[in-house]
Length: 375
Image (cartoon, rainbow, N blue to C red; front, side, top):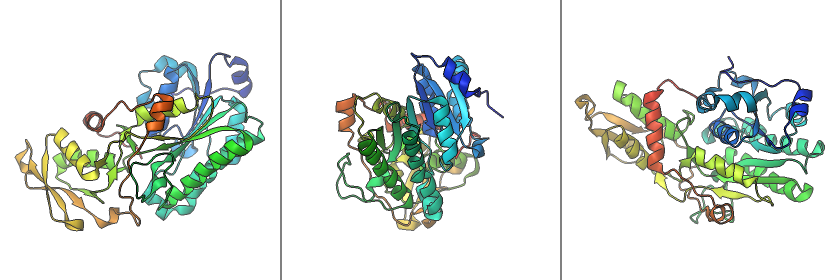
């Protein structure tokens, strides 16, 4: 099943047909949320895009297929999909040598914090050693003067900090294997930038959502759960309702990723909105958007959200949200809030989508495509 995506031909043909005025971007990890949005953005900018996926992603190109549905001609002309895996040095080296890209975006990751406690070694192999393999391949192939490299970093690097908001100068305090692996990669980007003069930079991305967010993430879980509650009266089970996050839209953030590689000098940037929302408030926004209201009862792990208003009277009085201890992390990150003033001043970048608009998009998508399920 190829979802209508055109696959590339031989490297010699690619090299001979490469247009001098068309940039080539290699997106490693294109089947995820950010990869799909970035692919769309670069195609609109008339890039030749090489999007990679692992062989285990055979059935997981739904995001690309959906988001590129209105770019049929651009996709047919300028998109190639290749197999590559950041855990396989040879595959990374071969794809760099084959396409000689101008820009490389590493968006591949084991992206679930909770999973990193269960699979720390795998998380480190992908999130820490993966970027190392890419950077080392760029160096060994002699492409350090040609390629600009973007690494997707994370606000989880800040962990439990004592100062808000968090900027590029805020010290890191990681509290998960996921964040530890990302910090290794973040430091490595700086080392390769300074030691080998590679144009390499990291975007410290705060939480960013979209209709095609994976179903394992809390925002999608809330939207999907409340949607299902209206049909089955099944409660949504959540962890820390009072965790504070800075939620933006992935569509806005990939534009910033691209802007970072258009600068004369590489540097790291924080990407966020500067607006904070609790998980509890996100639940309330989604409920209201679906025509429901709820009342919170109890405290701690015994707290529940009870439906207090609905067109379907059978839902009133039913438990819509439950707190479940199993969804708490071993070490919680309580509050994350971005200071993206450097991005505003240096790149003239500001997010265009607020939290209410994000919720609206996610809810409308859920009603339109209730079986669209990606992780």
